[in-house]
Image 1: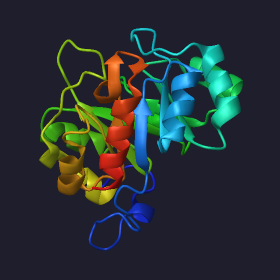
Image 2 (image 1 turned 90 degrees about the vertical axis):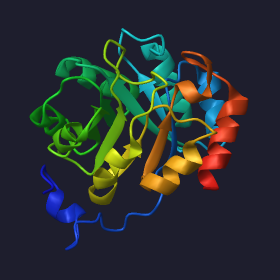
Image 3 (image 1 turned 180 degrees about the vertical axis):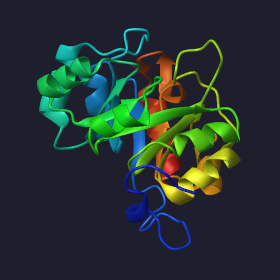
Amino acid sequence: MLRGRGADELCGADGDVMNRDLLSGGVKVCGITTLEDARACVDLGVAALGLNFWPGTPRRVELEVARVVAEQLRDRVELVAVFVDAERAEIDRVREITGIRAVQLHGGESPDFVAALGPDAYKAVGVVDASDVEAALAFPGEKLLLDARVPGAMPGGTGHAFEWELALEVARRRRLILAGGLHAGNVAEAIARVRPWRVDVASGVESAPGKKELAKVAAFVRTATNA
């Protein structure tokens, strides 16, 4: 049974998300660290960019860079601020300085914490087995991101995939953002099997963490949009 705020509006009588268009959320590239990469990704057809504010990742973006990216590109692309166990005050500060409203939470945040941030916030959940999917569905809102959970690794951007079949229930009930080990060589299969609302990529389009390789971005976008 679907839980969390907004469940009644999101599900029809058969439990499927209403108006769920396959990949209508497009491609999100996460871990943008420069204005140049941000602009190039937008030019290549990326629908959303993830700007990571977690200090523990090499993909962390400087706040001033994020502000400039938002100032110059907010009318062309969706921008998402990514946090891991950040204090509410820090999230509010980033929102105020950059104007970015969408928030992706990758830590141990509670459903109540997500709900308090408003409808533009959503939870990213690391998946190993079906119990993780059950836990994910306890979070509020229309969007959920599922990624691979790798013990001892940082949350997200590990280059590891999880069993896609575990994501099917979420794809039926929410706007699923599918992440975890995606690249141009497997994203078409992932889309065909899972039917997500959006696909999310970081390491699969990089030459090094935080350094986007534009040929890989172009190939990923082309393959995903033609899937």
